[in-house]
Length: 213
Image (cartoon, rainbow, N blue to C red; front, side, top):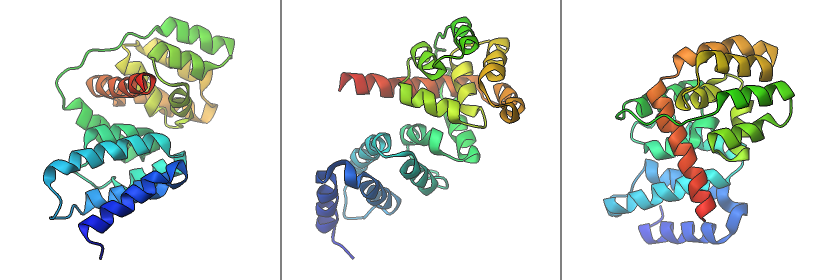
């Protein structure tokens, strides 16, 4: 078994190799957080959690899904990390993440122009780009939201952005494949509004941090 110093040295080596080793680095940091060595000061943990959040943004979708599975049964995973992994998580895990967000004090609803989104959907253009602008999200994240077959992620944006049910329904009907529409429509009631507001805010903060960098 590696000593604490050897383990830290190995992590630094993986980090120095750049994006090619990001998935391996994610796995190593996840292992460290799951089995925190007694020799490591507790205050160091927050730094590794922040590192893993950053890595989660950089790895590809299969690596994010593998990382999400690692934390599905973890009751003490930081909510900020789980918010990063939401779109790569199972339906059960997504519901748990929304419940944890919903447990926070009432958040401020974002303001999203639903009528503009319905207009964009009718034009059949680049809807994810319109969603990204309206919700102040990255284009990549908006694309992931629209690829979520369950419609849960789209409901998060709608409820967190204060959209009324008819606008959400119109977007689902216009933009989603026919087999997914009914399930997506039911998500409007299943997604808690306060939980959605907090999750959408976290996604927006991620974009703000990226732009600042």
